[in-house]
Amino acid sequence: MRYTQGGQAVTQFTVAVNRNYKDAGGEWKEETEWFRVVAWGPLAERSAEYLRKGRKVYVEGRLQTRSWDDKDGQKRYTTELVANTVTALDPRPREDGAPEPAGARPARSGEPGIPGGGDDFGSGDLDELPF
Image (cartoon, rainbow, N blue to C red):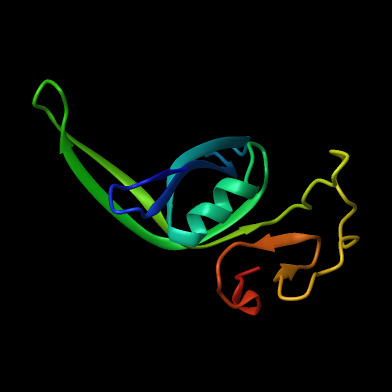
């Protein structure tokens, strides 16, 4: 996480999405696509605090393509997901480092959560998740 000159928090992280499919010969294939996620403001702060490598996460937002000139004057482009909602889908580890069993962590007052111990870092309605 970093802060812009104007004091706005911003966090960038990468998410891997796995896809399994059968090729033309009927053989199963797996491919992984990586994409960059950018979160701003309080969502950036909470994401930086709670997300760690290997954690399962649901991210909702909009795609944005940016361009810049590199040090050689070449025009470069990147497409990233600007997050509106970031929800951890696996249990948060306990104080002793071991993960809590799914559903074992009670929701605290004022703290949103999803079945299985997930933590919603955004303010979206959890009943609208597409799964």
